[in-house]
Image 1 (cartoon, one colour):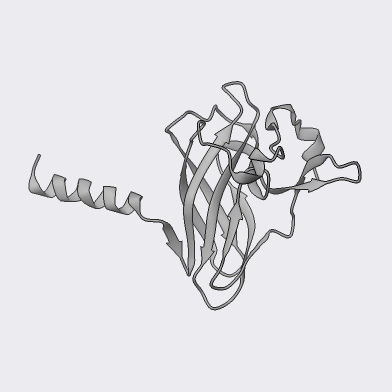
Image 2 (cartoon, rainbow, N blue to C red):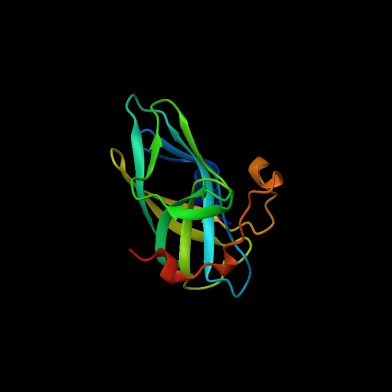
Length: 169
């Protein structure tokens, strides 16, 4: 391998090791999951950090990995049942603060997957922020990621039984 090739490979490895950063928005610890090879839905989780001086808002997400990509959260209904709902207003990311997208809470929802989420592969997702504009991230598929704290308390939902008609506008 030539010195030039080695430097290019080292630079690429360094870039992929850094968090995604755009106009004060940083994306950390991102990963995506689906419920299996035949799944029609999946989700992505991450920590969004706003190092800027003004609040921002994640208002949309898009990806070729699914027919529809929406911002979702879990809401407890009057019977104590947790349900997923689209959050059309998006997620506030406070100045100097974080907004965590996690299992059992806010997340990016993929509906009508165009192919399976394969362990170790990357999914390209474009996040759109009110102030910072578009941020494109490569999110690794990690089907074996251990549950977050909320899941261990029983609030994890299985996305495999969702159907598209429940999420149309």
